[in-house]
Image (cartoon, one colour):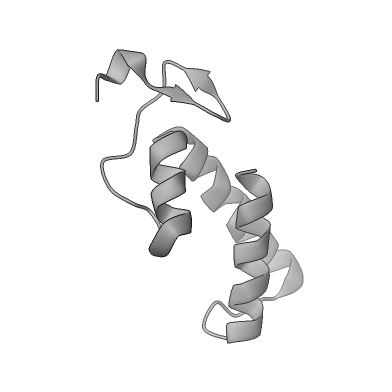
Length: 76
């Protein structure tokens, strides 16, 4: 893929495409295909804030589900 032709669905043109999926499964593939590395970094910042504010444990399946739902909302 030509870097100049990549258009991030969140940030627009001129951003860095991801070289590999940042998350497992179909969701990760979709994020890689349509969103930039910079958009992923924005998500990581928001995820950290979410985890801290709600005192989530990413190893707990219930908390992990909440984090993934927030990720889906961020990237929709």
